[in-house]
Amino acid sequence: DEAKRRHAGIAFVGEIGTEPAHEQLSLIGDMREAMVNGDFNLVYQPKQALQAGRIVAAEALLRWRHPQRGMIAPSLFIPFAEQTGFIREITPWLLESVVRQLSSWHESGLDITVSANLSALDLLDPGLSVRVRELLERYAVPPGRLCLEITESALMADPTVALAHLADLAALGIKLSIDDYGVGQASLAYLKMLPVHELKLDRSFITAIHKTPRNAAIVESTIMLAHALGLIVVAEGAETEAEMRWLVEHGCDVAQGYFIARPMPAQQLPGWIASFRLLEAS
Ligand code: C2E
Ligand code: MG
Ligand code: MG
Ligand code: MG
Image: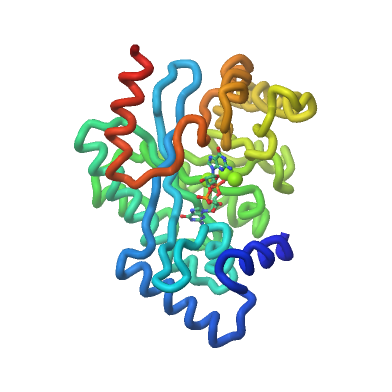
């Protein structure tokens, strides 16, 4: 995994995260600047409820337009931000941006849930749930509109502390989602204790699902298991009509993927949803 990341890093931006110490320091400086001068920004990818056909949610995804290196994918700088602890500065900014955006969409009558991604370090932060509560109050956002996505590997960094902090978050009334579900190392015994609302199946299971019986078996049984536990299932990375049809036919609740839409700037989302509804209705 590390080797793959390094390889991708070289291909895209030079050896991000593996550079000499002074280069890493300058990258941290660059990230700090990026937050101030708007080179970090969020794009939003719609999530569609498969039975009703409606767009019910969107995921906020971070983008970094570096002045010299160009666009840097989150898969490259998020791990670096995690290793250096800089994620502790990104997440508060991220949460405030998302809650502010939610509040403006809520005021304009756009009824969607918005999710944000958390890292392992965020889950260890004892101040996280207080921060989230204060943001929801300050921006008058109903807690149920916010969803936080957490990967299994982030949970496993310290499962006991993560469980306690997730319980605090769940008590606020926000939604919690297990991201990249099925590729991590969390046991079912652990997962059943978590106060989560949805399982988000990793894209690797969804790709070509209609012609990959082993993936189909995994997804079908996950849907049954999740429904039996009262959870909803989100499929990530649906790229084709055939994959979408399979998901609808097998009772998957929600899908997100390029077939529906790519992540887009916040200003585009309301218009995109409106035209999507018109299209559905016609
Ligand atoms: P993720 O949370 O699993 O997000 C889904 C990723 O899959 C996104 O990549 C999205 O653009 C991509 N995707 C969605 N539909 C499709 C599809 O149909 N086909 C393909 N090939 N890809 C699809 P992105 O934006 O590059 O983000 C990658 C990862 O970086 C995210 O995975 C998440 O783990 C992390 N990330 C992104 N933004 C943040 C953030 O604000 N905070 C933290 N901690 N992590 C973030
Ligand atoms: Mg996610
Ligand atoms: Mg995911
Ligand atoms: Mg993923």
